[in-house]
Length: 82
Image (cartoon, rainbow, N blue to C red):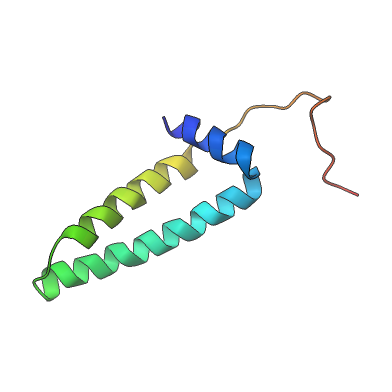
């Protein structure tokens, strides 16, 4: 499942740019995870933010851990060096 999501995202945007965006989203999810923990345990608030950010963090880690590593054919390869 994670490889399928990774393959879809990399095909529509580009591997490097998409991984940068996903890494930034992972940082934001980790911030909200820590903030949700603070709200839940230090202020006695709801666990909704904690739960949602925990699920988002786990999903982003799985997507980033299994990148699409398919080898391109020489005919389909793009030259990235000018």
